[in-house]
Amino acid sequence: MLWGNGQRESHRAAKRGAMSSVTGLHAPKGLEGVVATTSSICYIDGEQGVLAYRGYDIHDLADHSTFEEVCYLLWFGRLPKPEELKQLKRRMAEERKLDAAILKSLHQVPKHVPPMDMLRTLVSELSYYDPEYNKNDHDANVNKAIRLTSQIAMLVADYDRVRKGKSLVEPDRSLSHAANFLLMLNGKHPSPTAERALDIALILHADHELNASTFAARVTAATLSDMHSAITSAIGALKGPLHGGANEAVFHILEAIDAAGADPIDYIKGMLAQKKKIPGFGHRVYHTEDPRATHLRAMSRDLGKASGQGKWFDISHKIEEFVKVDKKLNANVDFYSASTYHTLGIDVDLFTPIFAVSRVSGWAAHVIEQLNDNRLIRPRAEYLGPDYPNQYVAIDQR
Ligand SMILES: CC(C)(COP(=O)(O)OP(=O)(O)OC[C@H]1O[C@@H](n2cnc3c(N)ncnc32)[C@H](O)[C@@H]1OP(=O)(O)O)[C@@H](O)C(=O)NCCC(=O)NCCS
Image 1: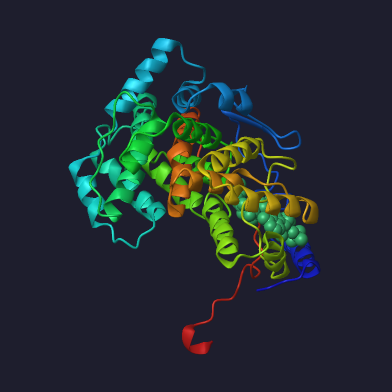
Image 2 (image 1 turned 180 degrees about the horizontal axis):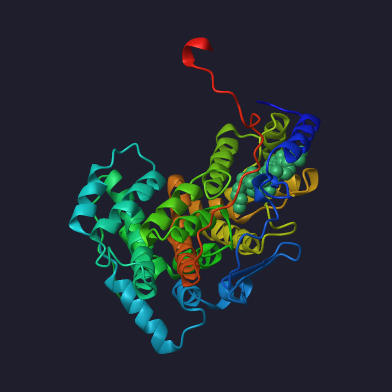
């Protein structure tokens, strides 16, 4: 049933009188502005463009920290001491392995399947071989956070090699998480510049409060289901083009502009004329520059210049300038990550899986936090359907 606003409001008013009401409040579409939980993990000020993990500003973390240190911060609530960080890195290295059955499944995935779909299915399968399969306590979930973070990076890198008919590359215990990912993906040690660029991208993507995928993870965890189920739910939510899938959509646009030799602004004007949304722009929470975009813009520019592939930044920058003025929309995290990842030699359909390679750290932190003080997450819907009681009519009399 499609209603105009007036009809909907009078229907609501009538219902409030006739039927028992659920709540005095109307549900804002998309739960915009609703505070749905308490959390001590991530602080966002959408007006000032502030993002902080456990109070630490994202700019400080991007400039000085590493992805492993951020994982420690998210899972344990504070920055690690040197020995604690060393121990976490050792544990992550130990968990960089996949069961033979998982490797077999990886080879059996039909080659047309995008890596994000492979990830959704195989992360679920990882649970079968998890040594703490039946455990859902705090310590087991911290172990699963470490394990899943190591394994998800392996799944993404290994799948890319399998689908290209290449042999798998063993991880190197002496390398960081970012360097290991690039090694397992490309079969050669990354340059320090490439390693640091990916490390910063992983830091920037690690957590973002109650975004759609994290909310999905918390809802699943709150039923007292398990960590793997929560992370699988989150991956399904991340895949969509309104969420993590936007970074792939951005690059398809850059490619289309480049291939057609089109003017970037004309191309975007054409999309807007067709009422299409421009991927990589707009945000539910930020009404100013997304602080993650600040770093990714600089990385896209610097990596582009250094690799002789500056055209992707140039096209992106023209689009950004236009959309900012014409639509009053700012670039979000996904806009410049597209050109950054491409310049690092990463295939387009790996962009969203790489988001998951990082975000698993935040998802796991939220699952752990949810279970530390759990209550089932079960909101209500404002009912707008036919009046109750609706007279049931036998099938032969309809
Ligand atoms: C991120 C996003 C889903 C937030 O959505 P939201 O808070 O629900 O905001 P809405 O989609 O309701 O947009 C509000 C208005 O801005 C417009 N708008 C928002 N993002 C836009 C975009 N990327 N391109 C063009 N117009 C956009 C909408 O069309 C709408 O205009 P209207 O009021 O005239 O109808 C949205 O900005 C979007 O779809 N962006 C593109 C996808 C993307 O980059 N996602 C990654 C987010 S990190």
